[in-house]
Length: 274
Image 1 (spheres, rainbow, N blue to C red):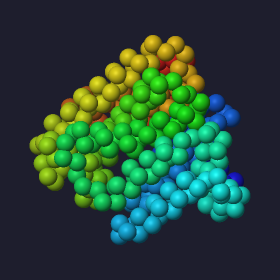
Image 2: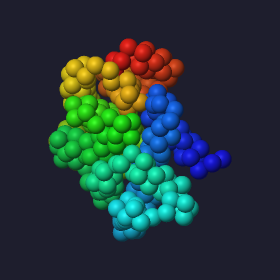
Image 3: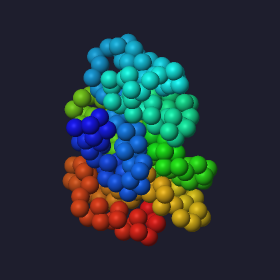
Image 4: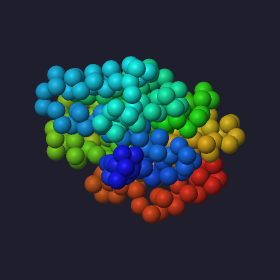
């Protein structure tokens, strides 16, 4: 298995929905988009694996140093396939170092994670992580239109918001909560408050989706960035299932996308609607 094949397989296993969306990217740059997602997975794994935040700080600093001194690095000399791929992407697509290090910084904050106090705090975190990742994805796809980029960041933000609702049971099991204290109490596990919290997050997500669609419908052909925009299609479908279950997430069938979701993605790609 080649290094890029290993990265693609990593995304397929650990970030399946983004992997599916990436299949709608042009063949020539699809692997670059998937390598970006592999980089994000690598950063997230640091948070999950280290016991001491200081050890995580060292690893994040290594990534930050790698990206900020990329002009002096030889890609061929790197044994880490993700590191080699991210340097190649930065150079090939002229990606802003600030955009890359901002993602690293946002992920590093999770080493000392504290429950967000307000819905606005959660929204900011989602925008800095998943929103930033989607922004980078759009730039790899060659899109720099400011309205489209704003829409893309909103869609990325929604992807994280819905993701935290979908993974609530997992986060509860590891005693970690992303749900705002103002909505569900200091533990984030007060069952009678969860439905209220989910409804509020869903409402915020819908506002972001409406904002994105308002910007996109004025742009004409947005198919070049479809591989990122299609996250909106999946997010809408997950939100509808949650609403149908009255936000009893365990009954909403939102753990992973299905064949019908894929058909919806194909249809929306054909009609340039997300």
